Image (cartoon, rainbow, N blue to C red):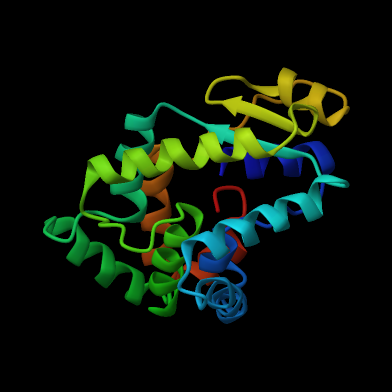
Length: 212
């Protein structure tokens, strides 16, 4: 979310982020699921890998890639807190109930797990296995770095701020605007309060775009 907000500041245009599927573009969930299914129907990891490489090659001629990375353990902690607690974690029940009350369709849960299997190139991934998730996370980042030409790739680490991003994109530094820091616990707590007050996450997004 920090990179999404940073790009929106730089270009003064909306940036399509997976979070849009939660807030403003739930109608796109089915479209993304169809795309993911199209890739995964081969049931052949070798073909999936080749397909992903073909996609990368097809876009590299005209596209720069910003890969956001962070300490793997920080990533895992955030993943468990915000995205997917373990199945035996009591928070999971509360999170699932909260998502349904907020109007988040259950279809998004399937898209999330299927997308992660595709991104991590591992159909039999155990989402309760922290060690496996960390291995997949590191392998995913390594695969991208090995397949994208360095001139087209920026590895943007947590805390890097504006300078390397703006230099890579060949744009001016935003004047007197701090680099956004999203996904903080205070933001998440405020989001929960806004959803409860507004009745749904879509309503909260319309009224409070500065946080969502």
